[in-house]
Length: 433
Ligand code: NAD
Ligand code: G6P
Ligand code: MN
Image (cartoon, rainbow, N blue to C red; front, side, top):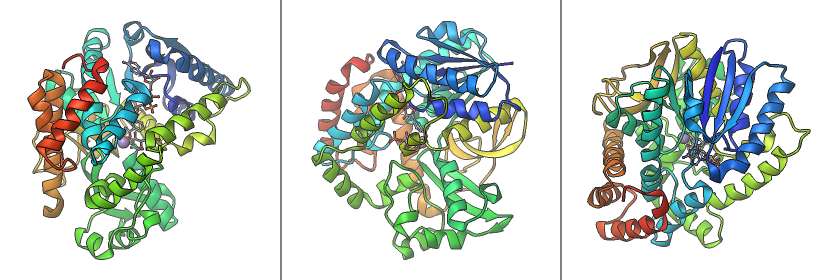
């Protein structure tokens, strides 16, 4: 039997994960599932944990669900640790989005200043978790879903000796599913060669049954309805000539870089109307927890699909199962580059298609990224590295450096103003500063 520990167990995504474990019980017999949270999330943990128990009971499985605020007790002898926490909960996310926007800068929780601050809050905690893992379950795999997943994976690789970490995002699987739908074929027939970074990943080629359909898919990306594959980002069509010349599949987060102005104007409008994504999600979360409380509910309610993390359970559980069962299939994950992308350092985290084995993901070598995207990817990698360093050291100058080299921040002066305001707003969650 397998012991899984999920940190941030009170997340509204937990039923998604539980559904994944139920579906794959035959190949991944989970004996214990420990959901861990903190005092601030205690009520959410109770509600979602009880739903998890009902789901498992309804499925007739012997998996034992434990709810706890004691992380160390949970971690003892774990086989897999998954992380899906948010330091400061959604109130902190609202600040990540709103403070940059009040300075006329894009406010997004994993890109630009918001992404930096989510990293500054998260990295010290993840390093603590890794310390506990090394002591209590040194052979466990850490599957990190907590954003900014790229910067977090980079920090763990660079600042801990723990090599058994995989960063996970639902964007690549969302693109696979979306492309399958556009082409009206079953998703199992789609293969995409993914390469880049988290929320900065490209599809270098895409195949159906071994035949490239890249040109066809690229044409489809000019349609606004097709350019985002996640619920949290509204699509906007690419200029057909641009996307043809780029000649690779984009991910939804590229809209923030190649349509900076349009995306900023849209966010500013939402900001003025009090409907940034944090506010939309706060409302959605309230509705979801009302549903979760119903003692007759024993399935994942379809309303959860309005969150951006669709297919999270498929991505997480297929990854855990392929490690556990040594399946050697191909999945896109965040792992150490080791030369998979020539223009990114060997020891940095990248998001690439990997062969998933018992020893972990083996990245598939892509040669290099096309020259037109290489520079942006390197710039974002530099941002992630400097951001991770700032989180670890608590150094103000390093944080300002990370802020200013981010392509979404217009100047050092604006960057400093945002930095100062955000440091103050988030100070209870930034003990290093
Ligand atoms: P949320 O605000 O509901 O937080 C989840 C839980 O984390 C809460 O119950 C909270 O109390 C708990 N928590 C906070 N600090 C903690 C700590 N130190 N230890 C343990 N638990 C703690 O967040 P959410 O909207 O459910 O998202 C959870 C996380 O998953 C976020 O970081 C989000 O960015 C991430 N996410 C990632 C992807 C991806 O593609 N990688 C997709 C969706 C969500
Ligand atoms: C996408 C991304 C996640 C992100 C989520 C936000 O799925 O891959 O990394 O956390 O969207 O969704 P939300 O519903 O919280 O806005
Ligand atoms: Mn993601």
